[in-house]
Amino acid sequence: MALSNNVIGAINFVAVLLSIPVIGVGIWLSTEADNACVKILQWPVIILGVLILVVALAGFIGGIWRIQWLLIFYLVAMLVMIVLLGCLVVSVYMVTVRGHGHPEPSRAYLEYDLNDYSGWMRRRVKSSFKWDKIRSCLSSTSMCAELNQSYRMAQDFFDARISPLQSGCCKPPTECGYTFINPTYWISPINNAADMDCLNWSNDQNQLCYNCNSCKAGLLANLKKEWRRADVVLLITLVALICVYLIGCCAFRNAKTEDLFRRYKQGYT
Image (cartoon, rainbow, N blue to C red; front, side):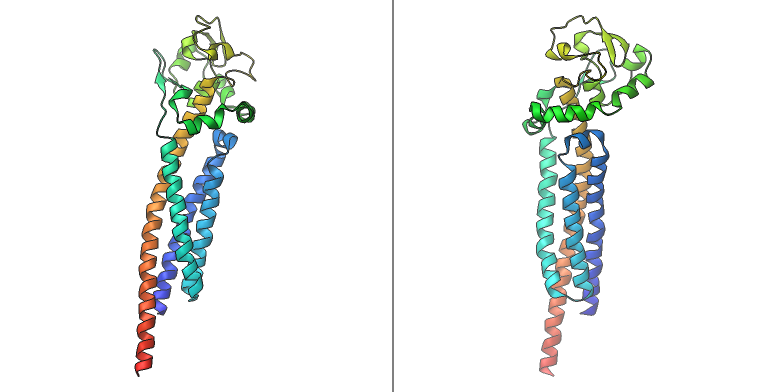
């Protein structure tokens, strides 16, 4: 029985370690400027990671000190955590399955269309109330100012692989035909009516294209890229957690069998 309990404790310690990638993913998302402004995914991930940590610690303590009710709590609660993590992994995949950038002639960077993304993601940025807060947060970052420091010549900028957020928010859409002065200052549009974003562009460094649909699309493209990376880590953790849980169930069942057999032998003798 002691050996089985030690095995259960060791297995649950692995589950404790598996909570670290989940919490780490949430912390990483919170450090990214776009996620910090939107605040959708990072807190659910962090909270779920902490819950997995607490449940795994309960199982570890229950296994080492032979506290049966803690082990039962672990088996039930960890199953719930696995289901929640699985739902989160599937949900992130489903809302990020749509959306991609569009190439433009003589440009290395891509342009982004808001309608390409899932309805759930669009709703996160379409409301003027929500977008005003996000826009204020984005405009306070240095992402557009960094472009001015990095690119002086037009061709250097056109050949740059800037982020979707910078492409959507820091410059006017390429189809408008603005003339490059610097990455955040453009003049003399050729086709000002090509898109409403052409009219929304402003050379005011506090405005730029933060009111444009291209900025919202660029934000969603950035979120999609980061959420997909996070989802891969969460998926790997989920698979590992399922394996650990199944091994733990087998170890717990074996421990119960050993205990019953030991009691039977004591009663028989």
